Image (cartoon, rainbow, N blue to C red):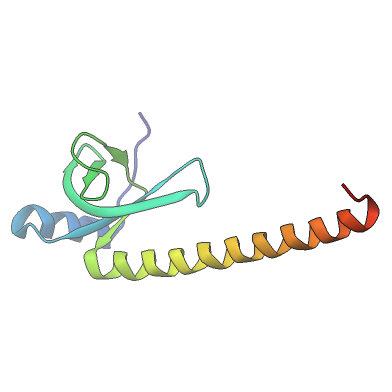
Length: 106
């Protein structure tokens, strides 16, 4: 199994989580668009997290773990980026179809 080094912030966040049950937000890589997912941590064990969003038994090897406020802010920015990407993709498809119909009408 690959080993992950924790940043000082991640190390402190994990300590606070264990001591005070502070809420944390984790991100992990994903193989489909948008290539990263995240969620509010409910359990941490052996570099894996369970989250509220994906439920008990669904474990992920996190790439980044932050306090809840920071995690939610980043998730909001990622959601905005994803929306912009999708809107550009929709516009490209419309333009493609328009140009294609000029070349060949089906």
